[in-house]
Image (tube, rainbow, N blue to C red):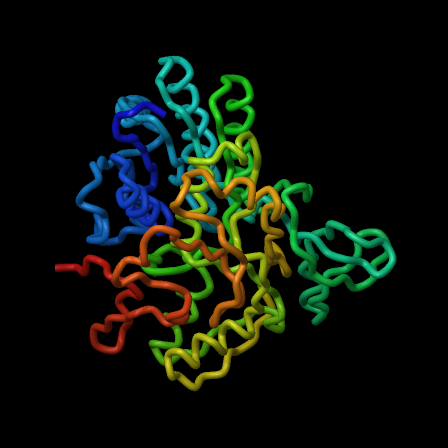
Length: 396
């Protein structure tokens, strides 16, 4: 890359993952521009206080041509985090923001011959369905989504699509066929395929990171897609039991947000992942039942979860990432000699394993939030209502 200060655009840079990418890039010496529309479902009170003042902030929509063209001016690398997420019924908006917005971003770079060196796009575990499983007879299989009739009958197992035997969960590799079971998931498939195909056609390096369930400071409480940890915390802090659908045995791959930010930096500065969809997660499964217990214990709230049969099909029952092949990760980690290195998958209290990145050249910065601090985020109350699980601008 050129000798000038590296210039990065982070779309969705005010969000959970995007804002942590911004902070890390600035620490690493990048000049950073943020493009974020401050979606009200996520940012109810406008621009959050955590937006790094060292970054240039622009409010706008990725689907607006002139806004996107201007944001890409004088940029070297792009972290495309902006997306419309959740389970809302707005099919056209998902396609407009996620699919069209991504396609237009790529067209602008190509048509205006912009000197972009690399694009990293945020994909999702949602591109998988049930995830991979092992059948006693047929080995590695990719099960079908469980029908709601099965769940209502109290059968929450994942069955082999060939013989119907009960399967066990195994880590899901990137080669697992996907397609998505929601409109959001379909548009995430669009995003990663568009970016990777465009990269092959233009010769510009691209990577699609399939994020696992990401949690940490700055999670929005207002977005229905915010995640099970924030939802459980909110209910417990308001004296209500967590609600478990099914028997709570379904599992998730939970990953701390700063680890996901570092995975983005690794994908950007290494050439070993170019052109690939790559799982970004811990590779360890945590059941929803265990998670509810961990959070209740951390908060000191003795409320057992309640059980409900889901009114619709759950997107998946068991899903954990198979981390990118270990020997290739080890080969990819030395993208900056003497600095960040993918050290190991290590056991931590809390949600089991997480991607642990350690600095070779400096100690962790003061105030670093890590998974070792547990799953209970700092909460602020107003009366008996929980306001937020992290610093957030409160209404005046």
